[in-house]
Amino acid sequence: MQVFAVANQKGGVGKTTTAVNLASALTKLGHRTLLVDLDPQGNATMGSGIDKSALTHTVYQILVGLSSFDVVKVRSPDGFDVLPANRELAGAEVELVDLDDRERRLRRVLNQVSDDYDFVLVDCPPSLSLLTLNGLCAAHGVIIPMQCEYFALEGLSDLVNSIKRVHAGMNRDLRIIGLLRVMFDPRMTLSQQVSEQLERHFGDKVFQTVIPRNVRLAEAPSHGLPGVSYDPSARGAQAYTAFAEELVGRLKGH
Ligand code: ADP
Ligand code: MG
Image 1: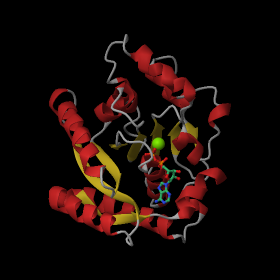
Image 2: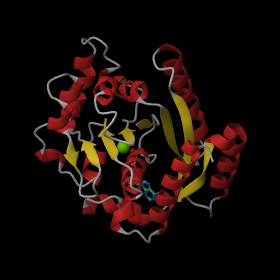
Image 3: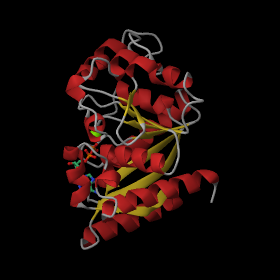
Image 4: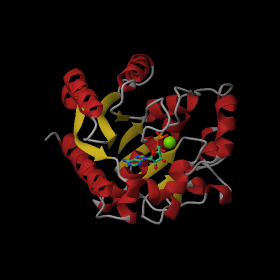
């Protein structure tokens, strides 16, 4: 089982879109996949086709030790499993502080199901909070989606430093798997420039696959489907499928 956190402390940069579409694409490639929604906004839950307002159990109960994995797990219409979230999860941030092993709660739970999944994707909230820390402590690697904008690189150093701190103090397994350029608009000179800058700084840590800005990806959540299932022929969907293939290939070492 490989656990990947999809993280970037900025909001609206494509974390959830990446997590949901990657989960679906990996499932279509035949991999047993679990998506963990660690954001109280519950967007990954909704985007997977699960109604967050109808949930009786969420990842919140798992983190604070009130429920077990099997009780909380939901199968999405696309066939991957989800540990869903809703607003209830916002309370976990406060409650976790008083619990022992507070940053390793998710890791402990995932350890119990390590034989049941090939891939676990953790959709992190837009912060470097205790919830994100749970994601980073549970993960083998981090996937960083980013928009090629002027301030993108600035925020990146905070994230890279947090990852280094977690690596040094809490989780020696953790590494950056790669940076994924998302919502890319090749007609913008600035996008090209930031993209080239990224390649210079991070070399082969930058995934070759680039996710274009594509309205079908943005429409998909309102239909309760990942973009790769909503319109598989759309450019965005095809890019996420190519990204899943690149990721799996990279892990095999080619
Ligand atoms: P985050 O989880 O980092 O906050 P989201 O994945 O929710 O970011 O994306 C923010 C917004 O951008 C959402 O409305 C989403 O539908 C849209 N979006 C994400 N990726 C793309 C894309 N490649 N093309 C067009 N819209 C996108
Ligand atoms: Mg999100």
